[in-house]
Length: 184
Image 1 (cartoon, one colour):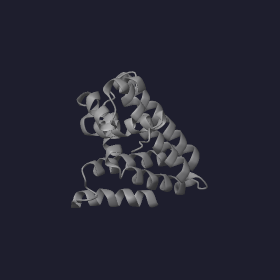
Image 2 (image 1 turned 90 degrees about the horizontal axis):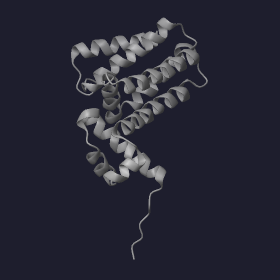
Image 3 (image 1 turned 60 degrees about the vertical axis):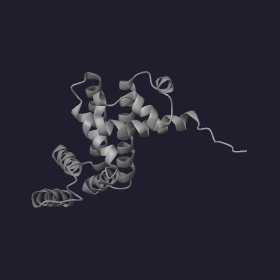
Image 4 (image 1 turned 90 degrees about the vertical axis):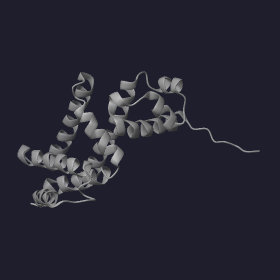
């Protein structure tokens, strides 16, 4: 007799968020069907809507999960450091998280979906929290924290174009400049 292990509700929810992140990373909010997400998560579409009240609710939950991981990684990386050392540690943590292409592409697509008022409010709140954390953890002035986030966004865009794995001279110049700015 074969026994199967049932997932807990929390495990199913986590599986749905992972599947949603993957599907939304590929096709964005408007191009992704809840049917595809349910199939990828191994659940029925009606059950998906028992876990999340709407497609946008699922989208926002997946985004909150991703940005929450960034926040926790920033906080952990900055612990015990200050100044530009804290920002450098947070930058390293961000680079490691963004090695997950689904997370990277989903976050970029979310920021590009800020024409939706609800998504815009959520991303603004999350960015506010990340900026507050970077300022508090580092103690650096706004111009240094701004440079930190500007470099992070540029690196994210270069990563989205696979320019870290398949570099071109112009991208290498930008990356070298970002790295130099982070180390000074």
